[in-house]
Amino acid sequence: MKHITLYTWPHCPFCRKAKRLLDDKGYPYNEINIYGNNAKKQELTNMTGQTTVPYIFIGDKLLGGSDELDDAMATGKFNGMVE
Image 1 (spheres, rainbow, N blue to C red):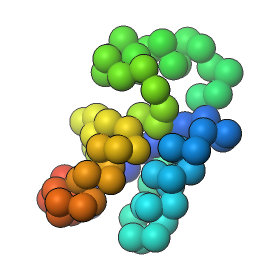
Image 2 (tube, rainbow, N blue to C red):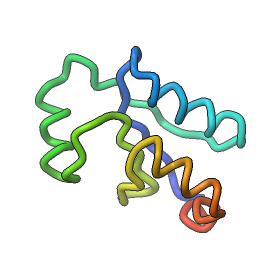
Image 3 (cartoon, rainbow, N blue to C red):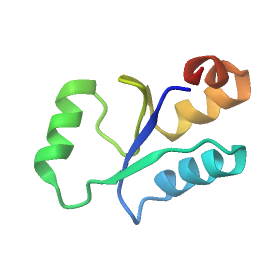
Image 4 (spheres, helix red, strand yellow):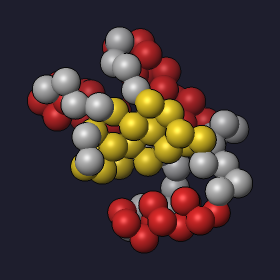
């Protein structure tokens, strides 16, 4: 299984929603709190074009944020991405 990494802020409701969905489905992930780390946030924005947290990566590829995770789970696409 490919590694799942989430870049989050602790007070972000979308980050909590994404983690809850992964927890409920039994997918392990690595969470990296970037709150207050403006350099890392800017690096992720420059790299992905995405300006909001969470940044969800499957392996080295950006899935997107909470909405993209929801969509990938609902369509079954997520299982294929992590295998």
